[in-house]
Image (cartoon, rainbow, N blue to C red; front, side):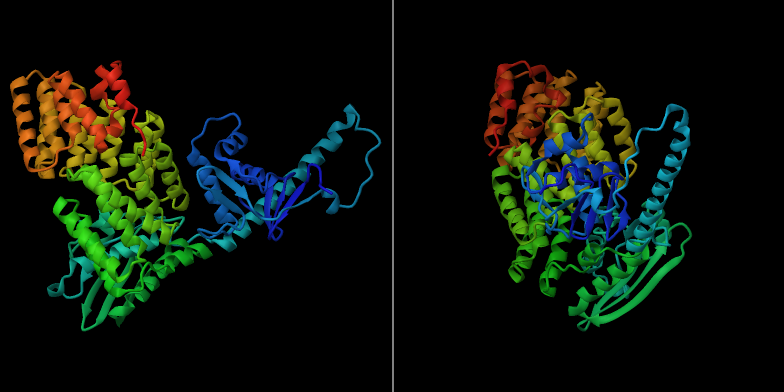
Amino acid sequence: MSVQNPDFYAFGEFRIDTRKRLLLRNGQAIALTPKAFDTLLYLVKNRGLVIGKDDLMAAVWPDTVVEENNLNQNISTLRRTLGESRGENRYIATVPGTGYRFVADVLAESAEADVPAQKEPAAPPPESGRRQWLFPALAGLLIVVVIAGLAWWIASRRSHPVSSTGVHSLAVLPFQPLVPADHDEVLEMGMADTLITKLSNLNDVTVRPMALIRRFTDPSQDPAAVGRDLRVDAVLDGSIQKDSGRVRITVRLVRTSDGKQLWSSRYDERAGDIFVVQDSISERVANEVAGKLTSEEQALLRKRYTASPEAYDLYLKANYFWEKRSREATQRAIDYFHQALERDPNYALAWVGLANCYSTMPISTDVPSWEAFPKAREAALRALAIDDTLAEAHVSLAYIHFFYDWNWDASSTEYQKAIEINPNDSAAHWGYALLLSSLGRHDQGVSEIDKALQLEPLWPMTGALKGHILFQARRYPDAVAYLQKTLELDDNFWITQIELGKNYEAEGQYEKALESFRRARDLSGGISETLSLIGDTYARSGHRAEAEKTLQELKAMADRTYVPPYHFALLCHGLGDSKATFAWLEKARDERDVHMVFLSVDPKWDDLRSDPRFIDLVKLKPI
């Protein structure tokens, strides 16, 4: 017989007290935010049913409009609280593309099973005597709340005590050679990159990405000073040498506030045992900075993506060239990723690396979309088939859905999966921000890019993308101010120069725009987008002859290499050639030019938005 309006729901080792709004494990209260509790209670009440995300958000936030990411964060919190490992569905199962389902057996109970029956009062207390029972009742309630709070605090301290080091952010610096003459940049960078990947699985510690720490290679540098530059609480500093089949490593953890060494160790192992050394270092550092680890964190720290030292060495070489981002370096990275996969076809991270190389080439190196993206998709799907808990693989697939498939829903789903798996994945946040802004949801895009900036405040790419989103939102002064600040981090980052130039041009500051675009052209090695923007600026500022000349340069470039049709369309539009503009835009649509995803929001096209031909072009059809 079912219990009407139950006071308790029991499942596994957990129990929900609906009256006190508490989640208990073996009788001890567990801390949950009110909305996380509401999410769990709604799922449990509707156990066995597939609950759509929209329905769940409407139930938990009935009077508020919220982003789907709020729900994803609650689900992620609940899974950690319930002790579910990644890919495990003991309690909450994800129904791809739809929502969630509570799958555990649930026992509904009434309070009568817990407390003896009591006599009901003959009549409610009279008005004159209400204070006599009101104050004791409130006092009793306060005692219950205090006891429950104390129980939660004790339980949380036992399950995950706070680290005494006070470290909440960390940077792993490039390793130095033990012997300067034996300098091996690939190994030194690769060791740091591997430890960054492992330590990024910590829930309560932010780890700076590889892109930020690559430049800190000076052997005489002060680790504490570098840590202050990177705005982190501690740095992991080490040296490494491979010699005669052995690997020798010295490593130390340094607090940046005072330069105090928190921990150090030395290793001298066979080269084939480098994975054991990496596990040992990451676990020791994690225990120092994060206190007692959850079972999930421990498992992720020990996770190895390959057992082949040869495949690992080739992966390190591939990543080394991939970080350079030039067309030649990217091709070398692709070659090394393929070699790594020949040694270990189940190396999921290598498949992700391969997908990233292919998917970014059409934007950064003038490679046709049809040539790169099918290969990127194959690699991303191979990675997910091997390990669908890789946030990086979901980000890569989301990127493909956005720039090539023009499937906004699929892209959004993959980005949100990545964020659910790893809320600290900055690439997931800035990729999702770009998608939101390109759909006209600029405020949400700014909010999401700010989350990425909290994780990567010093990486120029994140700052450049915020400038891009502010440009699409027509917030030109804000964009200029932010991009100028971003250039202080790295004035040689050509994407920042492009975004600054676009905002200058929108404000009518044509000379400044030309200066930024020329700088971007020189820094990028002459990518065709910079030439298109230079010509467009000439045309809009009344220098038609210079614009015509630039168009001829762009055509000459197209005789030597592929030039995206979108760039021709932009320059022809600036020159007022409507026929050529629409011809090039139609070609860009047919070739699935990656730049077409910005067509509906890019301010440069605002004067065409009422044209039926343009309205038709904006309706990009997904694959």
